[in-house]
Amino acid sequence: MNHFQATLARAHKADVGEGPLWNSLTHELVWLDVTGGEIFFYHPETNQQEAFSLDQHIGAIALTDSNEYILAIRDGFALFNRASGTYTYLAQVLDSEDVRFNDGKIDPRGRFVAGTMKYEASPGTASLYSIEKDGKVRTLLSSVGLSNGLCWNQQGTTLYYIDTLTHSIHEFEYDCDSGNLGAMKVLITFDASHGNPDGMTIDRDGNLWVAMWAGAKVLNISKSGEIIGEISLPVDLVTSVAFGGHDLATLYITTARYQLSDEVLQEQPLAGSLFKAAVGAYGLPENRYALAHAESGKHV
Image 1 (cartoon, rainbow, N blue to C red):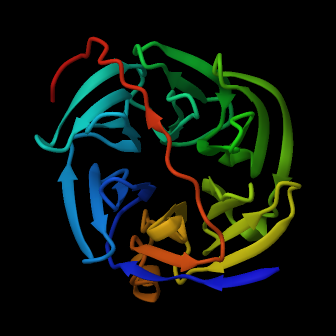
Image 2 (cartoon, rainbow, N blue to C red; image 1 turned 90 degrees about the vertical axis):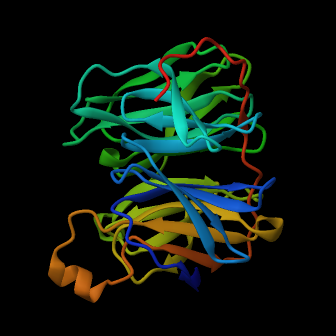
C-alpha cells in the first residue's frame, strides 16, 4: 500500500471546510465553510484567498458554463454571482429547517446532483436530488442517512456514492441520457478504525480518493474495492478532496474543526485548514452545470 503525507496549503479555521473544486479557467481552488456560510477562492501561486460570506449554510458549490457558480445551499439550489457576491434561487426544495443540503457534483451531462442530511443525522431521513438545466428538480434516492461524496467514472456509466451512515461506497449504474440510477452494489465497507467516509473524488485511472472524517486520513480505493493507498493528516476531521493545480496533479484536502474541544484544538491547531498532497495520480476536469437561465427565484 502506498503511504503519503499531506502538507499545509493554507492555514485556516473553517468550522466545516468542504466542497473543493478546481476552476481550470481561473486557476483557483474553490472551497467552502459549510456552517460558516463562506465561499473561498484560493490562488496557490500567490497563496492569496478571496472570501464571500452568505447568510446560508452552503453544502456544495460547482462550476457552470457561464461566469456564475451553482450552489446547494441549505434549502435548495441557487446561482452565485461572484461579481456582486449575491445568489439567486433556482429552486427551494426543502421545507424542514432540520435538514440541509450537503455534498454535490455535476454529472457528465451537466446536471447538478446533490444530497441532504439532517443536522442530527439518522438513517432514512435524507435524499439525493438532481437539478436539470431547465431548473427541474428530481429525487434520485430517498431513505438516505447522510448523503455525502459522489463522483462518476470517465465514461459516465457509473456513479460512486457515499451515504456516510452506511460506512460504505455504493456503485450505481448510471444512465447519462436520462440521469437515472440503475443497479447498485457495495464497492467497499470501511472498518470503524478508518473513520467515516465523507467527500470523494476519482483520478484518471479510475481509482477513488476518500476523505475519512474522524480518521485523520484520505484513503485511495481501487476500482475493485481494495485500499491501495493512504494519506496521513495532522487533524482528525478530514472532509473532502479534489485534484487541482498544473495538470491536475495536486490533491487538495479540506478539513474541519466542528465541535472539537479546546483541548483537541490545542493538539490540532491546523484543524479547518486546507492541505495538499502529491500522490502520483492525476485528476479529471470538473464538469459544468449546463445553465439554461431558467426563471429564477428571489435575489439575495
